[in-house]
Image (cartoon, rainbow, N blue to C red; front, top):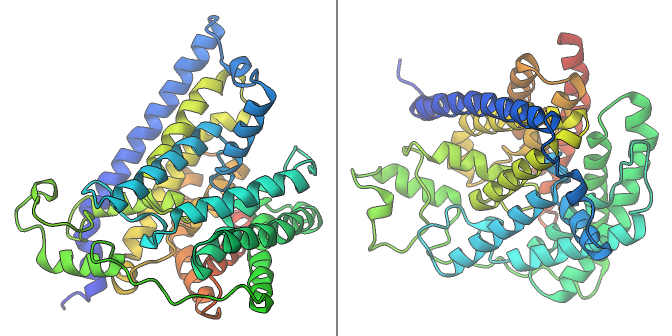
Length: 421
């Protein structure tokens, strides 16, 4: 009996998936070894670095705090990770504008709006920190970060570039999402014993719904016609279709010097799956780019190593959190590779920033937790997000479906995993 196209695609990607899983296991073991050596060195008198990390001037600490909040959706909260992520995204945007062969997947979905996405999100974060930064729940949890990854950048992607759009999105995001997050966490997530991410992502969904409804009533907010993509900035579906049909042709991509187009791999190329999984790490910030994700993860690991001896118990779980995130990213991309091919984009990033890290931190890590959370998130999260997004009006960004799915997935998944594990 012949395999259906989706099954054939998964079979073709199995070697890539197996290689990714093996690499994740090795990386996890390496990080545990590095942690042990670092802690042993601290016991022997090697400086921990915590003092240096917290001894900057007032403006330095303020900037570092804002950068750290840009990576709160990944559960990192690292200034170095935030700096690396933004630098990687900026390099990707510059490479795309120059049509470089090294740019990979296009940042901000190839819309050329990344500078405005960053401006709106950054302004929303600053305003939110000024208005809500002093409001802290038990454990010093704050909600200011939620404005960075919700309504503000989404409004720019729907309504187009310009300071009027960016400022409107930033103000609406600041006034809706953080206060809702504080309310939902304190009134629902904490009393029910759920991870606080359920309250923050629910607030992102509700705040964005309110913000887009308000935009309809604002006379200066008019959604422009979609920008036609340049020939060298095609959506992922066209790229996959072209390269998947042609195959690699026996020539390496870096040797094809005569063609100016996106240098992404087709689905028949072994590196498409790990690159797509890596890019998913920065989808929450609307970047979706490998270089941004490498900067994010690299910066987080450097900061983790530097402050590990002085860190709390959560620092010891970073290897488990990262391994679980990488594993669920690879599984989700592999499972929904046919949807990537058919639709051009699919929310496979959903479990990376919701159920998986929340479950690892809640249950204390370990391979049983990593495997169970990764599989559960990869199977349910993306399809649930897509189903919800299809219910939205055309002038509402589909990220609302993603954050709503994160809430449902985490609120249902963590209690189930507690029972099973």
